[in-house]
Length: 320
Length: 256
Image (cartoon, rainbow over the protein chains, first blue to last red):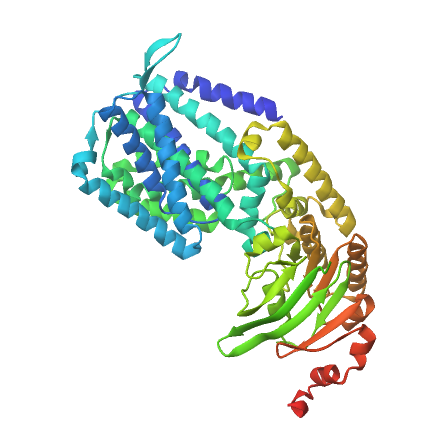
């Protein structure tokens, strides 16, 4: 039953642009896929290891700025800017992780948040290099040249959709394989009981670092895709608004699940877009949705759907 | 070679010496019980041995190498693994996953092995699955392998703790009140388990209030009171020791 399910999902993802013909709706799907990449990264450290990082926007922004600056200043091709974005965000993650991962809980939350604010201030004030509050306009669409294929450029929404999916899918596979391995077991062991994990030789620092750096690199990739897609970035990418978005997506979808961040990103991107009709009420509605979902489905949609599915097959519903 | 050599170990919390000038040794395959009234410093002593607390003074030598003040996961990797007084399991993991987490330090696969599912990873995965299964049989938990740890009965959780600890292949297993809150039947199962663990070549040190268990399986007993060692000897010697009797019957004031 698993292989047909995967095949059906692949077919759905592959043929989606045929069904979604409106450019606007395709735009939403692309944004959802970019958010899914970001949220999957956040889910590693927050959902699996259980440490809430509020610095995830910093890695998103570092990825976006790295890509934009390399493309604008050095005219590097997309392949390089994407890799550099992941690499630099990962390095930043290793640096800040090294400092903060010896801290726990509230301290970790505060330091990661401050880190994000510091990067924001640097970007706003270093006008010569980053363009300051005006941002960086004219980030080129992904383009490059491949030996044998020749020059290529991604301009249409449909081709950008496939590009984003081509980045997203390998990341899903990486997360899946990490989680279904001793690394994933160590993550969850730390979340469930850090003292016990230490007492059998699991290093909290080491595994939190693996989750944090991998998550930061994911955010860098998401930032790069975002910069090249939207074509304009400003220090706004570091704002807490994006952090809240990612958190809600991770929590609603299901923390510590593989598909939760994707489900959460799709649902919440659509929802927040349709809530634009009530612009002023949007943020309070976000808050209300988050509260209601934490009260009524604290584990998120994916585990709830799983329980419903098993209950339907067995004919009774068990509470967790 | 002496397995464990504790020298002049002390820890002070402010002015309070929770463990003071404690000297103690443990030999290969020995079962040593640490007893004493509540607040005598037994659990503090275990916390010092396992690295959860750093001593104010003194040394801990494991096979003649100093391990004093190392972080808990490093001490575990040397071969000293503990359980906790208040039952600690991984509540959301299944019994099998928990034991696999216990086997963690033998994982050799790199990140790349894991992502590409290399042969190193696949062979290791099979090996660890088999080891974990073996430990479930050893502790009598095979029938519960797919249950979540939080759904186990109290007695089963305590067995699971031991199984998780054994996953780390300790040379010394520290058991903090393994029989606390157990009925006589469960206590007997625990005694049987500890005896079989020793038979595998593991030295066991236990903190325990259940005298039936202590006297039944220990080779040697050490009694602590107010952070200091007041007596040491065979179970028979300890049972007759006047200071031990005084400490337990509350006549300590008479000696002060």
